[in-house]
Image (cartoon, helix red, strand yellow):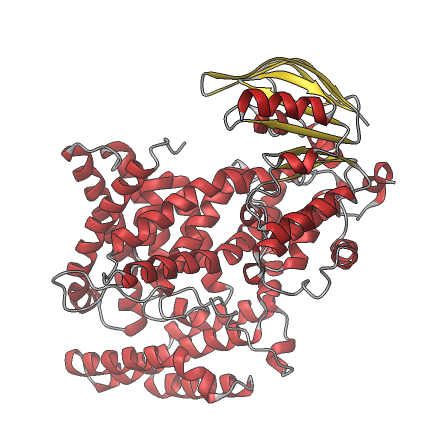
Length: 185
Length: 218
Length: 225
C-alpha cells in the first residue's frame, strides 16, 4: 500500500464523515431531505475500487468505535454500533467492497456511455443497498427481537431515498471524471 | 467536527484500562442476547443506566446522543407488542437499552488514544506476520481528523456561494468539487508525508528513541 | 554539503521533463527559477528522492537518492508550496513531532523537541491548537518548522511564498535568510533569490543560465519575462 493509497483511504473516510455532518439536502420531489452519508460507501467503491474503498469505510467505522461523532447528527461511539442501526454501519464496509468489485467488472461511471453508467448504478444497488441491508437487517432483527420479516419490512420506507442516492453517486462519479479525468490507479 | 464523545473524569470506569472495558462489553453484550427474560433484561437496563450515571456525565450532554435511540426503542416496543406480545416487547426494548447504554458508557469513559493503543496491541500478532501496521492506522486516523474540518469548511463555502446567488445546492454540485479536491490534494499530501522520511525504518532503532538515529544530525 | 546530479534525465507520463542535467550544488543559498512547466519543480524533487532519475544519478553527500532514499530524506528537508497539504496531523504539536518519530525519536523526545522548535520560531502557544484554525501564514511557518525540527543539512523550498500575502512572504523570507543550513529555493519571486549565491534558470528541461543572481535573473527577465 503506497503512501498515496493511505492518503486516499483516509480522505474518503474523512469525506464520509463530512457528508454526515453536512445538513440533509432536499432533492427535487422527495418530501424529506436526504442525508448524504450513505453515499460514502458507494463513492469510495466507485472511485477507489474494492480494496481501498473497503479500507476507507473500515477506517470510518473505526473512528465511530473510537468515540468520534462522525455519524450523521454528530453521533458515534459503541452505543450506536451495538444499537439497532449498527449492522448498517458495519455493512457500509462490505458495501464499498462490493460496489468497487462490481463496478470494475460492469463499467466505470467515468465513461459517458449508457451501459457503463448503468453498470455503475447496478454496482451501487447491489453493494450500496443490497450488501448493506444484508448486514443491517439481520442485526436489526436480532437486536430488536423483531424477526427478519418485520425488520426487512420496516426498512422498505428507506428504499426510495436509497435509490435516489444511487443516481446521485453515479452522477457524482461521472462529474468527477469530467472535471479531473486522470485515471485513478 | 466537535471533539470526541469522551468526557474527562476520574471515576472507577475512567480508571479501568480500555482493554478490560472492551472485553467486558463484549462479554456482557453476548450475555444479553442469551437471556430472554424481560425481568432480567429490565434489571440489566437499569444497571446499565446506573453505570452511565456513575460516569458523571451531565444529563444535558446525554440528550443528543440518546434521543435518537429512545425513539427507536419506542417504535420497536410498539411493533413487538403488536406483532408478538408484551413479554417480547419488554425484553427486546430492555435489551436495546442495556446494550446501547453500556456501549455509551464505554465511549464516555475511554480516551481515543487508549483505544488506539489497545488496537495496536491487538494488531501486534498480525503485525509480526506482516498483515497489519499500527503505524499506518495511527497516521490514517490522524489524516481523517486533520481533514474533516477542512472538508466541512469547503462544503460550507460551496453552500454559501450558491446561497449568495439565491440558489440551493444539490448533492451532486456539492460533492463533486469535494471529491475533486480530495483527488488533487492526495498526491501532494502523500509527497509531503514521504518527504518527512515516512515510513519509519522497521529496524529496532525505531522503537528505542534517538540512539543511533541522532549521530549524523550533530 | 553538496548534491551532485550526473547526466540526469527524467521522463514523466511519456514527456521528457528534464534532459541531460549535470550539476554540483554546493553553495549555501541557491535559487532556481523558470516558467511553469520548465521542469524546476521536478528538479527540486530530485534532490530528496521524491522523483528518481530515469537516467543518471543524484547523490546527496555521496548518498544515492535511489538506493538510500531514507537517509537522503533525513539529510534533505523539503517544504512544499501549499502548507495545507503538508500539515498532516490535526494538532500542531503532533504534526511537528511526526517527522521526528519517523527518524526514530521516542514519543516523549519528539514532543519535547517539537515544543522547542515551535518556541524557537515564535510559534509557541500554538502547540495544542487544531491545525485548521491557523492562518495561512501560520500554516506556512508550521510547515517550515516541522521540516527544520528534523535538523536536515539542506532545505529545499518549492515556491514557499507563492500563496502568501506580503507580510507572510516577508516572514518566510526572513526565516530562509536565518537558516543555518543550505537553502535551495524554487520560486517565481525573483527578489527572494536576488541576494543568493547562485541562481539557476530552468527552461524546457535544461539549465539555460547558471550564474550569480544578477546575470542569471537578467537573462531570465530579458528572455522569458
